[in-house]
Length: 118
Length: 112
Figure 1: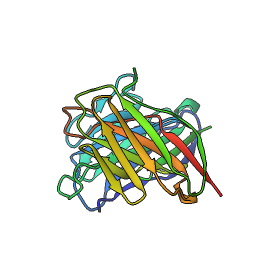
Figure 2: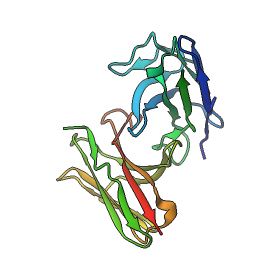
Figure 3: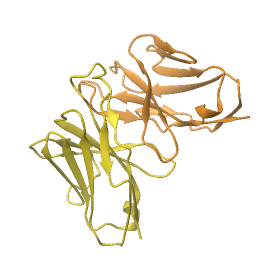
Figure 4: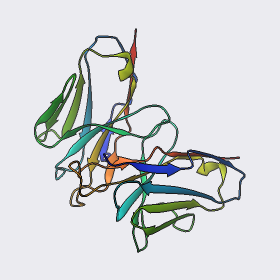
Protein backbone atom coordinates (compact mmCIF):
# COMPACT_ATOMS: atom_id res chain seq x y z
CA UNK A 1 0.00 0.00 0.00
CA UNK A 2 0.83 3.66 -0.13
CA UNK A 3 3.53 4.79 2.28
CA UNK A 4 4.17 8.29 3.53
CA UNK A 5 7.43 8.99 5.30
CA UNK A 6 8.02 11.89 7.66
CA UNK A 7 11.30 13.15 9.00
CA UNK A 8 12.36 13.88 11.67
CA UNK A 9 10.23 11.88 14.07
CA UNK A 10 11.34 13.94 17.02
CA UNK A 11 12.91 17.36 17.22
CA UNK A 12 13.80 19.54 20.15
CA UNK A 13 14.88 23.07 19.48
CA UNK A 14 15.48 26.36 21.21
CA UNK A 15 12.96 29.15 21.04
CA UNK A 16 13.54 31.37 18.03
CA UNK A 17 15.01 28.73 15.75
CA UNK A 18 13.37 27.34 12.63
CA UNK A 19 12.56 23.70 12.13
CA UNK A 20 11.93 21.92 8.85
CA UNK A 21 9.81 18.79 8.62
CA UNK A 22 9.79 16.67 5.49
CA UNK A 23 6.95 14.57 4.15
CA UNK A 24 7.61 12.11 1.33
CA UNK A 25 5.34 9.82 -0.62
CA UNK A 26 7.57 6.78 -1.09
CA UNK A 27 5.90 4.78 -3.80
CA UNK A 28 3.43 7.14 -5.38
CA UNK A 29 3.13 10.69 -6.58
CA UNK A 30 1.12 13.19 -4.61
CA UNK A 31 0.10 16.49 -6.18
CA UNK A 32 -1.58 17.37 -2.92
CA UNK A 33 -0.45 16.76 0.62
CA UNK A 34 -2.02 17.87 3.87
CA UNK A 35 -0.44 19.10 7.06
CA UNK A 36 -2.16 18.54 10.38
CA UNK A 37 -1.30 19.57 13.90
CA UNK A 38 -2.35 17.77 17.04
CA UNK A 39 -1.98 19.17 20.54
CA UNK A 40 -2.02 16.81 23.53
CA UNK A 41 -5.39 15.18 24.11
CA UNK A 42 -6.89 16.99 21.16
CA UNK A 43 -7.78 15.86 17.68
CA UNK A 44 -6.02 16.58 14.44
CA UNK A 45 -6.55 20.01 13.00
CA UNK A 46 -5.85 20.71 9.36
CA UNK A 47 -3.28 23.47 9.00
CA UNK A 48 -2.82 23.69 5.27
CA UNK A 49 -3.07 21.97 1.93
CA UNK A 50 0.22 21.69 0.11
CA UNK A 51 -0.05 21.89 -3.68
CA UNK A 52 2.77 20.76 -5.96
CA UNK A 53 4.12 23.65 -7.96
CA UNK A 54 1.89 26.29 -6.42
CA UNK A 55 1.18 28.06 -3.16
CA UNK A 56 -0.22 26.23 -0.21
CA UNK A 57 -3.75 26.87 0.99
CA UNK A 58 -3.90 27.69 4.68
CA UNK A 59 -6.78 27.12 7.04
CA UNK A 60 -8.26 30.05 8.87
CA UNK A 61 -6.12 31.09 11.80
CA UNK A 62 -2.92 29.49 10.54
CA UNK A 63 -0.19 32.02 9.81
CA UNK A 64 1.35 31.36 6.41
CA UNK A 65 4.51 33.31 7.28
CA UNK A 66 4.95 31.26 10.41
CA UNK A 67 4.40 27.88 8.80
CA UNK A 68 6.13 27.86 5.44
CA UNK A 69 5.13 25.07 3.09
CA UNK A 70 7.03 24.07 -0.01
CA UNK A 71 5.88 21.33 -2.38
CA UNK A 72 8.60 21.37 -4.99
CA UNK A 73 8.16 17.86 -6.35
CA UNK A 74 5.47 15.24 -6.68
CA UNK A 75 6.89 13.25 -3.79
CA UNK A 76 8.05 15.85 -1.29
CA UNK A 77 6.40 18.54 0.79
CA UNK A 78 8.17 20.42 3.57
CA UNK A 79 6.78 22.36 6.50
CA UNK A 80 9.08 24.90 8.13
CA UNK A 81 8.10 26.28 11.51
CA UNK A 82 9.84 29.64 11.57
CA UNK A 83 11.00 31.30 14.77
CA UNK A 84 9.49 28.51 16.81
CA UNK A 85 8.15 29.24 20.27
CA UNK A 86 7.04 26.89 23.06
CA UNK A 87 3.39 27.23 22.01
CA UNK A 88 4.34 25.68 18.65
CA UNK A 89 5.26 22.46 20.42
CA UNK A 90 2.94 19.89 18.94
CA UNK A 91 2.62 16.72 16.89
CA UNK A 92 2.73 17.56 13.19
CA UNK A 93 1.39 14.96 10.77
CA UNK A 94 1.28 15.00 7.00
CA UNK A 95 -0.92 12.95 4.74
CA UNK A 96 -1.32 12.21 1.06
CA UNK A 97 -3.50 10.18 -1.23
CA UNK A 98 -2.45 7.71 -3.88
CA UNK A 99 -4.95 8.46 -6.61
CA UNK A 100 -4.10 5.33 -8.56
CA UNK A 101 -4.42 2.77 -5.80
CA UNK A 102 -7.44 0.63 -5.03
CA UNK A 103 -7.81 2.56 -1.81
CA UNK A 104 -7.77 5.89 -3.58
CA UNK A 105 -10.37 7.37 -1.28
CA UNK A 106 -8.15 6.89 1.71
CA UNK A 107 -5.54 9.27 2.98
CA UNK A 108 -2.29 7.78 4.18
CA UNK A 109 -0.61 9.48 7.10
CA UNK A 110 3.03 9.91 7.88
CA UNK A 111 4.20 8.74 11.28
CA UNK A 112 4.25 12.31 12.53
CA UNK A 113 6.89 14.66 13.86
CA UNK A 114 6.89 15.64 17.50
CA UNK A 115 8.24 19.13 17.98
CA UNK A 116 9.29 20.40 21.38
CA UNK A 117 10.39 24.01 21.61
CA UNK A 118 12.29 24.89 24.76
CA UNK B 1 -22.73 22.60 16.43
CA UNK B 2 -19.29 21.19 15.72
CA UNK B 3 -18.68 19.71 12.28
CA UNK B 4 -17.84 16.34 13.77
CA UNK B 5 -18.53 15.55 17.39
CA UNK B 6 -17.63 12.57 19.54
CA UNK B 7 -17.92 11.62 23.18
CA UNK B 8 -14.31 11.87 24.38
CA UNK B 9 -14.70 9.08 26.93
CA UNK B 10 -12.70 7.36 28.24
CA UNK B 11 -14.68 4.17 27.90
CA UNK B 12 -13.26 1.65 30.35
CA UNK B 13 -14.41 -1.87 29.52
CA UNK B 14 -13.31 -5.38 30.48
CA UNK B 15 -11.91 -7.79 27.93
CA UNK B 16 -14.63 -9.50 25.96
CA UNK B 17 -17.12 -6.67 26.35
CA UNK B 18 -19.02 -5.05 23.52
CA UNK B 19 -18.66 -1.30 23.26
CA UNK B 20 -20.16 1.26 20.93
CA UNK B 21 -19.20 4.83 20.08
CA UNK B 22 -21.29 7.43 18.33
CA UNK B 23 -20.23 10.31 16.16
CA UNK B 24 -22.47 13.10 14.91
CA UNK B 25 -21.77 15.29 11.91
CA UNK B 26 -23.29 18.60 10.94
CA UNK B 27 -23.17 18.67 7.15
CA UNK B 28 -26.00 16.65 5.67
CA UNK B 29 -24.21 16.67 2.29
CA UNK B 30 -21.42 14.44 3.59
CA UNK B 31 -21.34 11.19 1.66
CA UNK B 32 -18.51 9.10 3.06
CA UNK B 33 -17.19 8.55 6.52
CA UNK B 34 -14.23 6.90 8.15
CA UNK B 35 -13.21 5.53 11.49
CA UNK B 36 -9.51 5.84 12.23
CA UNK B 37 -7.63 4.41 15.14
CA UNK B 38 -4.85 6.35 16.80
CA UNK B 39 -2.49 4.89 19.35
CA UNK B 40 -0.72 7.16 21.78
CA UNK B 41 1.86 9.35 20.05
CA UNK B 42 1.31 7.63 16.72
CA UNK B 43 -0.33 8.61 13.46
CA UNK B 44 -3.99 7.74 12.75
CA UNK B 45 -4.58 4.52 10.85
CA UNK B 46 -7.69 3.68 8.90
CA UNK B 47 -9.97 1.22 10.61
CA UNK B 48 -13.09 1.28 8.47
CA UNK B 49 -14.76 3.18 5.66
CA UNK B 50 -18.51 3.76 5.58
CA UNK B 51 -20.14 4.70 2.30
CA UNK B 52 -23.68 3.41 2.59
CA UNK B 53 -25.66 2.14 5.52
CA UNK B 54 -22.80 0.36 7.17
CA UNK B 55 -19.78 -1.88 7.05
CA UNK B 56 -18.59 -4.90 8.99
CA UNK B 57 -15.08 -6.24 9.38
CA UNK B 58 -14.62 -9.02 11.88
CA UNK B 59 -15.34 -7.72 15.36
CA UNK B 60 -15.92 -4.19 14.10
CA UNK B 61 -19.20 -2.87 12.72
CA UNK B 62 -19.81 0.67 11.54
CA UNK B 63 -23.29 1.95 10.91
CA UNK B 64 -24.51 5.13 9.29
CA UNK B 65 -27.78 6.89 10.03
CA UNK B 66 -28.15 9.69 7.52
CA UNK B 67 -31.50 10.87 8.85
CA UNK B 68 -30.03 11.53 12.27
CA UNK B 69 -26.57 12.34 10.94
CA UNK B 70 -24.57 9.98 13.05
CA UNK B 71 -22.14 7.16 12.56
CA UNK B 72 -21.54 4.46 15.12
CA UNK B 73 -18.70 2.02 15.69
CA UNK B 74 -19.37 -1.23 17.50
CA UNK B 75 -16.55 -3.39 18.81
CA UNK B 76 -17.43 -6.90 19.90
CA UNK B 77 -15.33 -9.17 22.11
CA UNK B 78 -12.95 -6.35 23.06
CA UNK B 79 -9.25 -7.16 23.22
CA UNK B 80 -6.57 -5.44 25.24
CA UNK B 81 -5.03 -4.38 21.94
CA UNK B 82 -8.18 -2.45 21.07
CA UNK B 83 -7.18 0.19 23.61
CA UNK B 84 -6.68 3.35 21.57
CA UNK B 85 -8.40 6.56 20.55
CA UNK B 86 -10.98 6.15 17.83
CA UNK B 87 -11.39 9.08 15.48
CA UNK B 88 -14.50 9.74 13.45
CA UNK B 89 -13.50 11.39 10.19
CA UNK B 90 -15.70 13.13 7.65
CA UNK B 91 -14.39 14.44 4.33
CA UNK B 92 -15.50 17.93 3.48
CA UNK B 93 -18.28 17.70 0.90
CA UNK B 94 -17.47 18.74 -2.67
CA UNK B 95 -13.76 18.41 -2.03
CA UNK B 96 -13.18 15.06 -3.74
CA UNK B 97 -12.67 13.48 -0.35
CA UNK B 98 -9.30 15.08 0.14
CA UNK B 99 -9.80 17.35 3.10
CA UNK B 100 -10.82 15.62 6.27
CA UNK B 101 -12.48 16.90 9.39
CA UNK B 102 -11.60 14.92 12.47
CA UNK B 103 -13.76 14.44 15.50
CA UNK B 104 -12.14 14.90 18.86
CA UNK B 105 -11.76 11.16 19.30
CA UNK B 106 -13.12 8.66 21.76
CA UNK B 107 -10.65 6.99 24.05
CA UNK B 108 -11.14 3.28 24.75
CA UNK B 109 -9.35 1.41 27.50
CA UNK B 110 -9.83 -2.34 27.61
CA UNK B 111 -8.78 -3.89 30.88
CA UNK B 112 -8.02 -7.50 31.83
